[in-house]
Amino acid sequence: MTFNKDIPAFSFYMLLSSIVIFMILLNYSNEGFSIYINHLHQPISDLFFKYITHLGDGLMLLLFVPIIIFKKSAYGLILSVGALIHFIIILLGKQVIFHGAPRPMLHFNEMSLHAVEGVKIAYYNTFPSGHTATAFLIAALLAQIKARNPFYQFILFSLAFLVAVSRVYLMQHFLLDVLAGMWIGYASYLMAKAIILKLPLAWLNFRLNQFLYTKSLFVFVSLRRRIQAENYRYRRFK
Image (cartoon, rainbow, N blue to C red; front, side):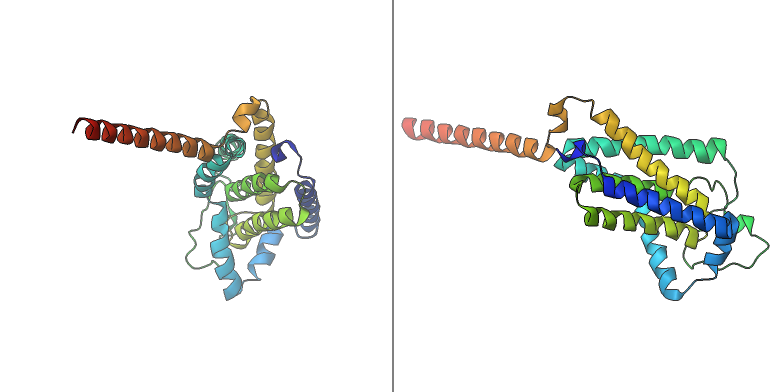
C-alpha cells in the first residue's frame, strides 16, 4: 500500500527549495526580492504565471477530492482531511494572527510597479499564501501515489513550486508568504495522513468505483432474471 510509505524525494525537494529561499532572503530581503522580480516581467512570463497560478485555487481541491476518493478512498480521505487542516491554518493566519497585513501592491503603493493585465490584485491579508498551500497539499498527495519515483515527484513539486513563484511574480504575496504556504500545505498532508492511517484497513482499501460497479452489476443481473422469469410465466399461461 503506497499510502503507508514516505515520499523522500518530495521531502528532499522541499528542504532544498527552502534553503534556496532562505539564501535569497539573506541576499535580497523579503521586500527587496519582490521589487527585483517585478522588474523581470515579460509578456510570455506574464501570460504563463497568470494562468499557472490557478493550479493553487481552492476550486482545485473540489475537483481532486471526488476524483481521488472515487478511485481509492484512502487518498480521498487524506486530501479531504488535509484540505480541512490547511483551511483552518490559512484562516487563522490571514484573518486572526496576521489580519490586515499589507500585500506587495499596498506595501509599495508609492512605487510604480508592473501589474499583470487581467489579474485581480489583493491588498490585505498577505500571510500565508493560500494558493501555495493548496498546490503543495495536492502535489504531496499525488506524490504518494508513486512514493518511490523521484522524477514523478519532481514534476509534481515543480508544478507546485511554479504556483509559489507565480504568487510573488504577480505581486500577490511576498517570498516569506509562499515559503510558509509551502510548509503549511506539506504539513497538512502529513497530519492528514497520520490521522487517516489510524482508520481500519477496510476503510483505506475501499474503492468507490468498484463498489458502484459491483452494485450496478448486481442490480442489472437481478433485473434481468426478473424479466426472464416474467417472460417465462407469460409464455406458460398464454
